Length: 211
Image 1 (cartoon, rainbow, N blue to C red):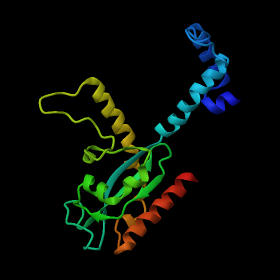
Image 2: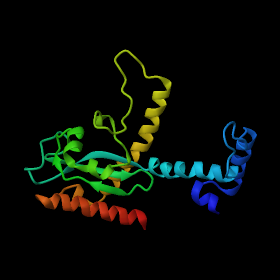
Image 3: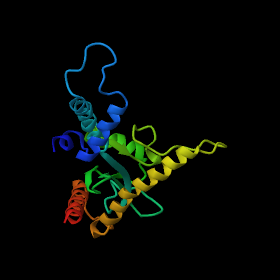
Image 4: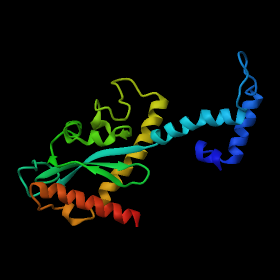
């Protein structure tokens, strides 16, 4: 039980690991003083910080922006898709699909990278890996590999991009579910009411997903 708690490995997995360590000479010390602790306890001590670090590494969030049609022309901007859209950026937990944070709306023609830098969302993401699409280049986020003119991407990078698209689709699905609420299809709120409307929809989305 203690082994699984500290290492994340089941008893049988921990046993196989110990056998592998012993087969590779883990019982001996090579040189210097002999080990005071038995090999099982030494392996446990080695794995515990790895487990702790892995818990942090596995936290993955996704950010993206979407257009919301609004009536407030001080926030909206002319667009081909909507008459006066505003852009909202949302961070989603890749594992749970829950909305972690939503930024205040900005004019719809604002570039995603600029909206990210100005939003303050980065402060919510300290210690967490955040994934964004190609519009977030040079922001410190994980973005797809870019293809250079006349030079195809290497197979490994193509595979990375395919996995990136698969994971990034989760935030797009979240936007799709959030837009089931009419207020995000034609938001008549103004000023801070726009942000409050998005926050309310995000909370209702999370409650529905967790139910």
